[in-house]
Length: 294
Figure 1: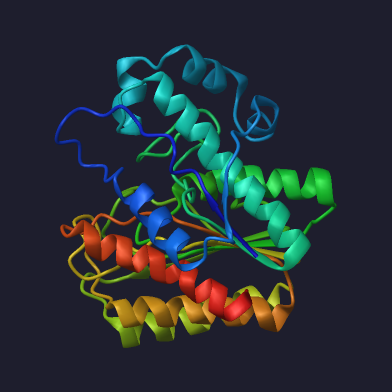
Figure 2 (figure 1 turned 180 degrees about the vertical axis):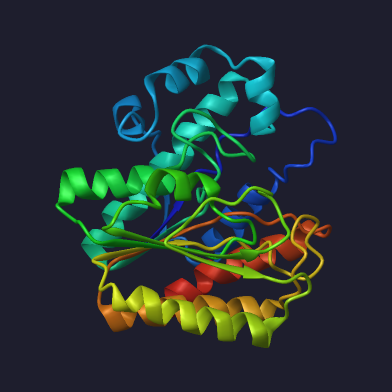
């Protein structure tokens, strides 16, 4: 078991920017205190690996500097630090993939960048680490059947565009029906939830969806464990409690044990008005992973 960190790279953001970049070092510090022997630093993904998923023109634009329209769509101003951070966010997921294949499970304390498309970034996501992990698992490890369990409150539209039509990748998205992105794309299984959805209703929907994942008999599970379904999240609109999120995670971890397949966990979103609440929820994801599969 390893918990991979890419917290060392801060993005240059203007004052008051709504992206909570401070959560990443706080999450890593909390987990390093609990499990210092498990935390490893991520390397940057190679441009070759990124090119398995993303168009050469998009990679060139990211390297050279994004135009204003691309930066607005992404939600970040371009900087060298953004490029480094985006590459390390994918590299961390690839490192977690390697550890999971060797040891059964691993977590990356970033990643889950499911709004990135082949030719563009959106919604704070430059590159799609989940899709790159699928491509690397196939190229380097001969894995074919893969399931992505995306429980971020926002639908993974980039992942759906890249992988939704792939017959050997099962993409599940359990998300807020009326939340960003307002134009949803087709995952293998989309489960839209109403505003204000609470623990019990959410977990019933998740149980039904995970049975469909299990029926596909995947060889690898990738889990996007965003915590923006937490009640009070600025961009969430659902109403899960911390206990509900822990129960959600436990169901995914139980599925991994039941199937006996490697599990990779990525961070995803979390934008609570109280950043400590977001950090606590993210930390609980990885503490739960260590207890369940460590």
